[in-house]
Image 1 (cartoon, rainbow over the protein chains, first blue to last red):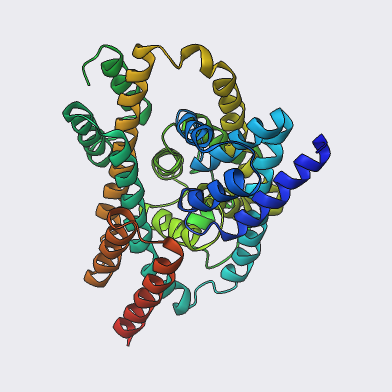
Image 2 (cartoon, chains in turn red, yellow; image 1 turned 60 degrees about the vertical axis):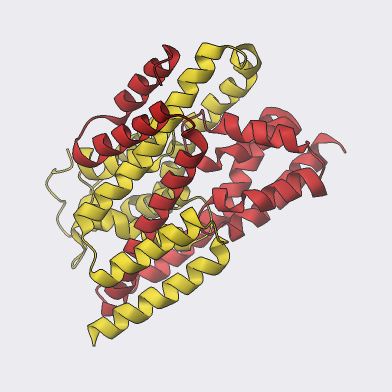
Length: 176
Length: 197
């Protein structure tokens, strides 16, 4: 395939996934794996896992693994096309939904929907923290770091970057 | 700067969040999201809450949790949806585009640099253990954000039940989200409507 065809394929594949990614991209990793490894054959399973681990090192939304897949397949252009494809369709859908949502301004329906959804959202944030913790906490020291960081965020106004920096330093000196 | 006087003729009946949000200029909007994207190691959500609620004062914890709730039920990356919603509320379509560009710009650049230089550092044991420790702390950042939102929104008992069910089914049991979420939302809405009667 020539470059344009590959880029187009990336755009179509990830654009479709974008519209189904309810609850975030991490929930759809099995589907992304199926498309990228089994259907398109862009990489093998080991490469896919490696890219996912790499994506966790960078700042930004978890969906950034998509940019890495695009990069692996078609270089820098692939990274940007993949990012636009995974964000574009869902963003447009979100914008349209917001317009409709804002017309319910002040309505009791909207207040009740928001009150019903907020606790579920908090539960899902706990769930994603738990998922990351389960992957990262392979030692007592790592568990302690997770708990300390949890307490720091919940009960103090400490800047999160210091929490990460201190943790990284402890790890580098073999203390965690 | 979040307390600049409102221009006259602001929209009536806006919630506090929207009345402060609507006063934000385009550069202020772009910079806030640029910061969230740049600092968002281990997930953007902790930074989004910190910048929007603590630093800029554009919304309260409750409003933030409600917005995230909306973002969860729409397709696409949650933080990307959050950018679109907040950007759109502040400055319309252009605002949405600015917030989106802001939050994605640095992560994509940094990610490409990391990917290119990965081969040279990936075998260094010091680098590996530093990253391992940082990702353990990153898990704590997410959990701490959830705890803070829980403490500040104080959901009613029915909310605590649906929230706990979401955590157990998705986080612990790892059931498929596409089945669990619609069912949970239906239950939560039914409980909310019953309580309102």
